[in-house]
Amino acid sequence: MATTDPITASRFSITIDGYEIAAFSELKGITTEVKPVEHLESTDKELVLKKLPGKREPAIIELVRGKTTDMALWAWHEAVLQGDIIAARKSCSLIMYGVDGKPVARYHMEHAWPSQVKIGGMKAGANEVLMETVTIVCEMLQRVAV
Image (cartoon, rainbow, N blue to C red; front, side):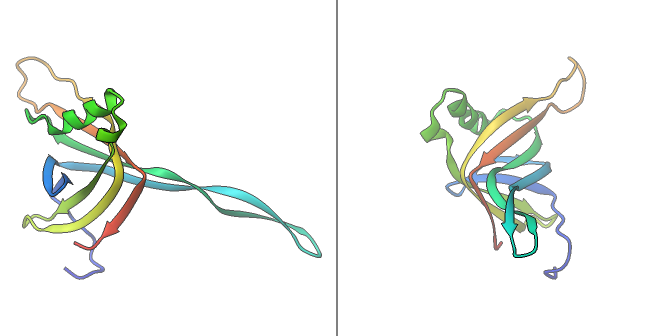
C-alpha cells in the first residue's frame, strides 16, 4: 500500500500493555479539537481581530462491536464508575487492521478511559447481534507508525 492510498480497515482493537482487551467491527470516529480564541491586535492603522489556537479538548474515540462475554472492557469502565481514577486512566493503543490481518494504522492514547458504554436493545428470540458502543476519552492522542 502506498503512503497516499486511503486506509481501509476490517477490524479495530484496543490494547493495554500489549494485551488486546477488546476488538471492534466499527470505528464511528475520532474527534480532536482545539477551541479558537479571539485576539485583538492593534496596528498603527486599525484593530485586527485574529483567531488563534486556544484550549485543546480531550480526544474522543467511539467504537462499536458485537457484545461478548469477555469482561475486560467492562472492568475498565467499572473503575471509572467507581471513581478509581488511578485504575481508570490507562495508556493504550487503538490499532486498525486490514483485511489481511496486518495493522494499517495505530494511535497511542495517554490517560484514556471509557466515558460511556452503550448496549443496544434487542428482542428476546431474535437472531440479531447485541451491539455495544464504547466512547473513550483521552488527554493525548498521537498517530504513530504501524
